[in-house]
Image (cartoon, rainbow, N blue to C red):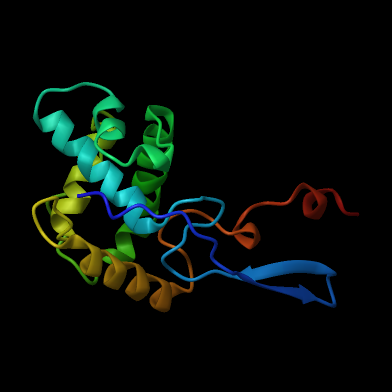
Length: 168
């Protein structure tokens, strides 16, 4: 199920690099860089979307109806999250396969994003009918500790900066 929705501000520590004169932040692992929602909220919405698909619904609208209206969730946002989550899992596949049995996941050009996400959720033990929140947080923490990256999303230092590529 979708985690309980609550709006709140989360203080984020920001630092200044004196040599480069740039700021950076130290995000907790339950957050996704450049996203307003937590990892649990994103995965919860996608699990709802998978349940809707299993009932024969098309698109992303069914999942938006199942969450708190205060969350401002839209079908477009769920589609964006699906793409981000599948990209994160694919990028982390080699490392995750050292921790989990991912042999059942087949990534091919004809395999859709929902099918790939469902495969990863199954292999990583994140199922709608189970208590998947602690399992997911353990996975995210383990991944971050292993490679010092976020499983989902990319922080600013992981993005290519135009100013860095133009400099003489």
